[in-house]
Image (cartoon, rainbow, N blue to C red; front, side, top):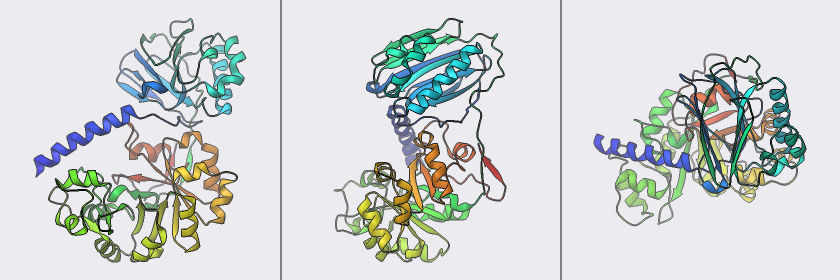
Length: 431
């Protein structure tokens, strides 16, 4: 059994790595955020991938690697081994294009050393800044087309630019004479009160190093660690019964099931995950939450709020992530706790806050990859008492629970977490 678990973990880690590397990013490091690195040598690797490359762009200073989001990333070197950086979504937001150009003017005036690279798409909102870019000597950047790769740097003194329709890669020696104490991207600190309702155990939480089991043992273990909000993925068996499983292909891998998918309820109940972990049908879900009266169920995958609420043991301890405006409004009319998902929220026309308030929506689920593009909206949601929980934790290298806790909680309310790594007794600042 242990050998089987280790084999799964190896396959899962490789699959996750490929997913991260191949992901077409949709966000940027949020404005006012600084990530400072410290590296043991002076080698800089820049990799810019246009949209059609279907690969994450990155830069690496020594053994410190940063995977980038959509737009233009500006890296400022304080020394050969220290840097700060920020990504501007110049594809989507003219304000970010203007802000980037303003910073570049300041850097040039101060003789700062920097590098600039594009990921995915960077051209769309640069149009209004083309004249300023040309004045600064960014001739190729001023002509960049949608979806092109782009790299520029002045690390050897003169500004050098490269552009390509698909991808670019460049290795550069960082001069060890750089000494610059000017900070262009200061951190913002968001105060928040630690509380265990900021953390949702993703798919029941991790157990024995295995994620996404949606199992009874995962609920037990993570309840004991401190979680009180538990996400379960709810899907349907072939005979129409609701059960907890991420998806049927994953469940089949977990259980070595070889039959037709989806299985029947009776077939589902015959199989344990890795032979150890008990799967949950509706009776198992209800029994567990009945025995843990301070626990809250957060659903995923499901978009039929009334039917599920009627089947669940306690509607007052139910929070349903929903994926259509029709389902959200139906839940609101029936007094069911709603968490609006990212797609319907961002697709709303008109005043988003007004819609949420009218429909009594007090919770939002968003990818942490997109919040950096929507800082003002996050702050307005916070001001109105609407709680944002971010997912895609542990999807990008280095962006784990600890990173989100230290950098994003406070801007958003909480996160979907695999592991409990939180101290809810101490005061903390999100930076």
